[in-house]
Length: 159
Image (cartoon, rainbow, N blue to C red; front, side, top):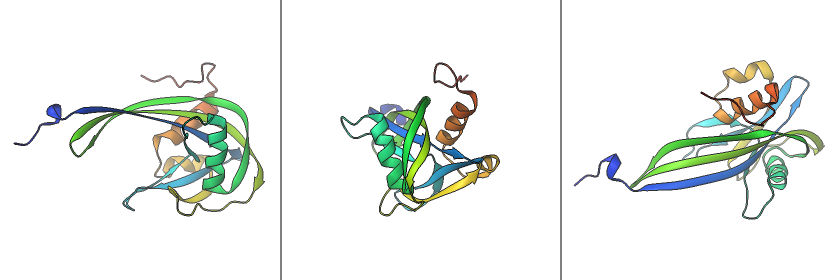
């Protein structure tokens, strides 16, 4: 007997991550994330998941350096982007919650390089007006909106 989607167990998963948004001379620094199967590649903000007990600011700085080669310093908290998605995996439905802390950062050291053996394969600068033409994750748009509007609540208004 084949289970219908409604009969599959519902699992709840949460991922807390921190990202650095670096805008310099009309360009933004992005990293290209690769799917585990080597398929789709999408541009994202440099950053990633927090280790247990890790401070978001420390996680952001560690992840940005891993993915881009740059050491960065946070200038301010841009905001927090919270998204829920319904996902599927074999034998289960997933109620996925992504909590993404976004900082405005500036480069204080290092040189641009690509990550080796990680979840990204390339880092690059893009003109801000070029970003909408890139294959990208929704976090890029959320971070750009936070950067543009600086909402006092640190949250983007959504319908």
